[in-house]
Image 1 (cartoon, rainbow, N blue to C red):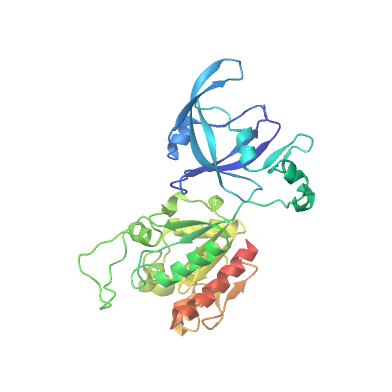
Image 2 (cartoon, rainbow, N blue to C red):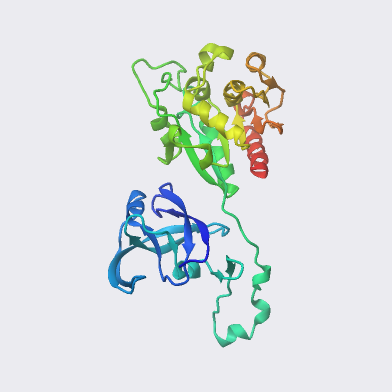
Length: 363
């Protein structure tokens, strides 16, 4: 049986958003890793082959196996591994083949995984020791951060500002984090023709469905995401923040934030995790946090009306230009004006990229 446990993320290689995380026993006596079959089916893993395996009690049993992606705590790699479909309620086991795939071996004394040197080239490799990196030089890596991005539809007049959302996603991806796109499953306030700027009568759209356009379908209903699932939260702008996450566009400082959105903002903040808000979104963050007595300092640029509403809701506003970022260290909130001031996508991108950079440094 395993000497110790490691946290492992197991995901569907074709649909990476379908995954689970669990504590696996590191088992030097198991050739293959194993996961209860009901959990594998839940994330869409299908059996691809069968093999005769010797069980712990000595019996030989034919079992189904399939491939899925593994990411082991402390190792910054995601690698396909063969896994056994074990009976329901079986232990999670991390087997030898998976460890070899990751280039690690068991240190039974310190109860940890340590890098191992893979020999290639036989005698030739052994004759060139200066070209082999010593295990003592290999630094331990950590699991990538998971950043939630709240999308509010698709289109700046009635949903998420697409430029701001895409620049945000690109900046996060370049930082090497795992992105979790979120949106509330509710009707939009209305639909606006983005050529005329006028509401479209009778056109009813869903925020989650519209957000999926930007996320390429990979978006979660925000009510099913906890602050425990993410390391930080980002809310791009667009009128959707003021129309679909709240009714700020209609009621200003007297607005209310959608309950599941407010809960995630408050819970994330109370957990000591950072929130980045872009464009008009800082107003929604201020309103949500004011309800629990937190009064963050933010910027939406220099718009006097929006700034006054933020102050009335209990926040503090500081003017910034389009390239500027406001960082409230005590309350862990970062904000930037984006299209509240920007005239060009390059200007907006510069401010957002700076804000995301500051967020990544702190989470």
